[in-house]
Length: 435
Image (tube, rainbow, N blue to C red; front, top):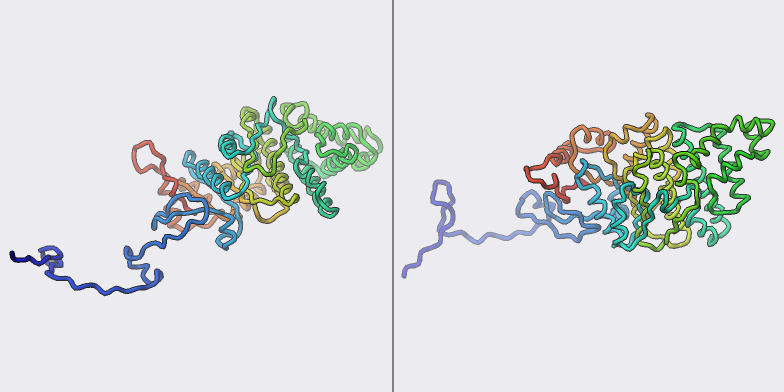
């Protein structure tokens, strides 16, 4: 039998037809040298750091997200996460995936103000605790010191003074915020002093970690000489004339449409060792915007107290905190953006991964004043990580005023906005993330 040599190429002009191909020489180089020779350069197969959330669009490498790890390695300057995309695009899904993964890494999940109750089942599955806030259910006293009260007893004198001032500042800011929500406007300097003095009187007389708004109201309707002096009045009658609007505003919190929600002792008692904690506000979904805004602000203050208490008691754990529908609370009255920042400000600078999930930047533009909108844009621009899903050009233009995006990145995000087929599938898979 006569052997027939193998041939390579195609039997056409310039088709590379050859009876023999010499063995190629092998060279070794670094990826930075041969990266332009695709497809000969391949991915390194590095270990995924963080919660797996999909694959890289170009290299198919697994992508992991862990804001705390990224901060430690210098990839970001803070652990704030901003998640935005079209409605129904999967913002809640990617947020829940992040929560599950970070809890698995040892973090504690805190969800203050779950308006739709969409995280309750997840928290239950993680072995955490859920409190449903509303009439006939659990109550959340805005002035409750919560776990910080227990931290006071364990602290030394200097630390105890700091905790006392933290509790007072949060209570006063929350009282001011609730007053602004009810009256849909700012409060005066005199009213701020009156609230502070009345709060100090109630705490000093009762010596309790749970002063109530009706207690504050009672002190204002029966003023002491110090309270009368603040209003520059000569007697109680003159005081009541000056303080009438403030007294009536607090009265609406106790007797108006918000009655039974914020005027009673708190029934929420969190376990700081729990893997997940959530305040479910879905029972208030049928209430007006005032009730939702007040409940969300109270829930944020509670969350800040829980986190601070853990640190004060020496049980520091990294926390992932979810703030969904953030702007729904802040658009009710002017000045609430600044008040919310005071309420939620924490005394540690690290250890909290804060995830904000807005519906749209139109929520930000709906804030009452330009000052509020400017402060809100500052809050958004300070987040270290953007997780973006498909969105329209108009929405993306607003985002680019807050966070820098290249033309290529912007084009990529808008290309995900429309579904590629007529099939009823999500318009973009989970792994299509621009981080």
